[in-house]
Image (cartoon, rainbow, N blue to C red; front, side):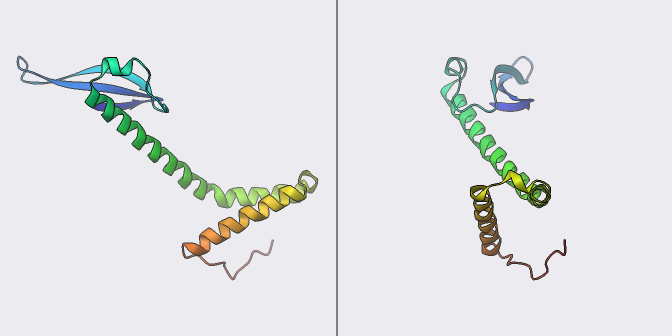
Length: 129
């Protein structure tokens, strides 16, 4: 079974050997959404048990890959997001209350702890802004 991503869908392609053509023929068997948590009920009727297992494994690996990519994107966007938060707080200080400020401090402490744990201690240089 081969899988091809087409937009938000996954195409399931079965390859079978043709003795007349002396090569494999590919046939599109099923199409499913790639963000599925459970397979549609008609899929086990279309695919063999082995193919269903392969599809489930493929979708699980795809979900892991997407989650990893989202985490990497969050890391790369963090400096800009923190800068935007600082600017927003200076421009609209009335839009935050004590509980919100506390949550921001807690989040910043978690980030500082994670940075320290992976080997990036607090920088000795500070911004003069």
